[in-house]
Length: 87
Image (cartoon, rainbow, N blue to C red; front, top):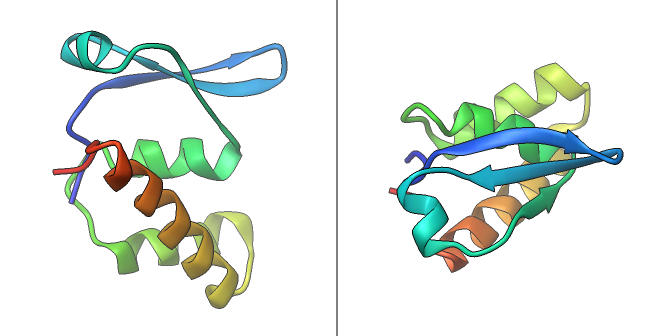
């Protein structure tokens, strides 16, 4: 799986914001705010990957338990699927 659209990740007023670019800007109106883990996942979803690899990467980069990482990744991917943002 990977992102369908291109996003620019920006920090604005202490918030991590995803700014849709190109075709995404036409289909998605507005900005998407997320936390540091969400921005990390967006960066990792620029290339084709698996849910398992995402969980492993979150565990390694954020030093959290696999169960917590899996729940966070599941929740984030569910939101992306809800807005049809994944291939």
